[in-house]
Image (cartoon, rainbow over all chains, first blue to last red; front, top):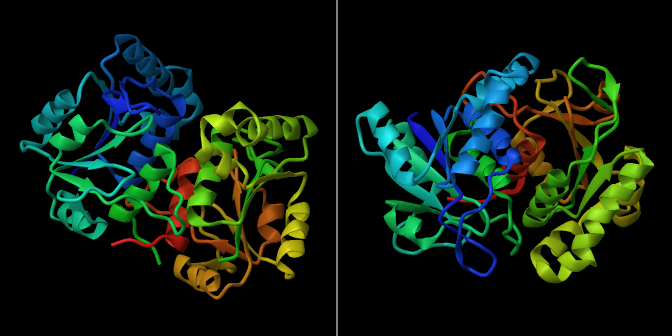
Length: 186
Length: 186
């Protein structure tokens, strides 16, 4: 499976649907890197143009990959090693192309159903099973800005639980989505 | 569906497999209550015997259900209203019995496969579909103490991604498990 995941901090929406850069959250880095490692995603890109946020993300990551945490918890080291901090989605795409030798299929996620370029979980799973390189992109705050949705090849169907309520954290949503795309169980 | 979920802070294991009480985490309360609400679980029990932790959990919850947060974010209010803080698993079971008029089937979760009382996702889903009351219990820290595993009717199969790595956060694991038990998608 040639799956890459990205967590976007800019451009995303705030509560008032304005374009903002959100702050990096320690829990996101830990939860999503552990998830990436469990499901065999090849890299987790943390995307933010803010230089101070790069330093923060790299400090957290370094603590667990080469600092005190590396000896304290080997499993956390293995997870956080999947992280690469980049300034923009384009930089992540370039890095993927360099590794895989092909343009990744870009699939974004959104809490609302998007007509036109929507894609189902089963279809996305088939694409992954065919060894096509896929870059799956998640948003923070109130979700990915439409500029990002516009540049994607497909927009994954939203998670619909079994109620009309649909406000999961990105940590929970990403877990559910990766399991739908790559999990196996009885 | 008559599903209740519980998050246990005591008794759980620490890194050295000692019996401890873990601290309540703000992110757990938010992520798990939003998850419970999305999938229609009837209540999220936060289980800790520490009185100061009760006060903390109730302060977080009150901020979003009746304080400033209730007006700021109505979706968060709806989620956090599913929380009830109790001192022990027995108190949660009593509350469930009072509502449902029957003893819940107790299903615990563990990151390792347990022989003997293990149950698959498809079997658990059938039980939920039959309207039997189920209490699904998650552990914090390094997982549920064996005293809790022993008192359960079944132990749910662990999540196995598609690697040998299996160290998800409880926030991510709970999302994957609820989706496997109650999610619907194409």
